[in-house]
Image (cartoon, rainbow, N blue to C red; front, side, top):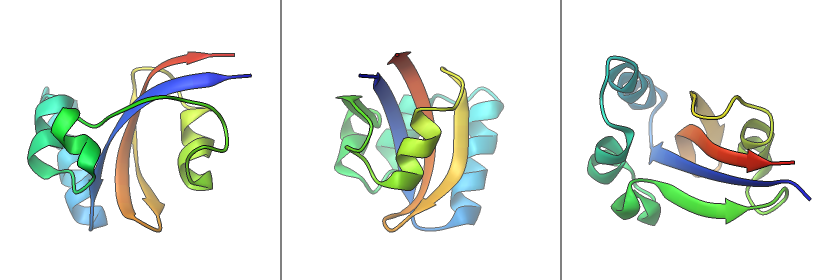
Length: 93
């Protein structure tokens, strides 16, 4: 069964999500920005979500995590929780 490790930043608005993505693309540190801005408890650990398999996260999240290129920031991804920037840090098939 596939497994992935990912990290994310959860914010309440798409505009904030896009602004943070721009900062990361300009060389900003994902982990530091997650600690500063993420409303998810995982923000304290730089947004790290650990390892998980398909179906363990909400469907919108799963779709990106199990299809997006590794080590590339994706988003904004809208879920019932808000807007996420996602980065898959590893994935096994």
